Image (cartoon, rainbow, N blue to C red):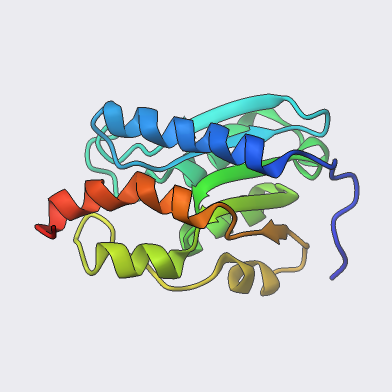
Length: 171
């Protein structure tokens, strides 16, 4: 598969830190500290989404990336989404990568890797992390999704560290 066309050159660190801010707002709102944004081909943030586990009544599928992909598919044509970039605080899990693929978002930039997140959360029932890279999920498809990450991984991991330590009883 070739690289998607029409993807703009963007300041990945700037937009990734914006996604980190969305994750922090989700945490302050009582939810898991995950967040993402969607940036269009003109470099404008068009959607933001925090994790919805608590907000959606304990819905284990209410990951920020899946929720944003659903909202994006209802709002934008596939031709628009192909030129968009999703910035997300943590690597999309297999479910979220599938959602990104199905709606046709052209690029994903993530902070913390799934592998790093799994090491941090262990087998916590609120986050039974799959150590399955999103690149593997996307590679099984027929459409190319460009992936950049992990990027700013230690900064991204800080969003998670104290949250999961409190939940797992670690110091």
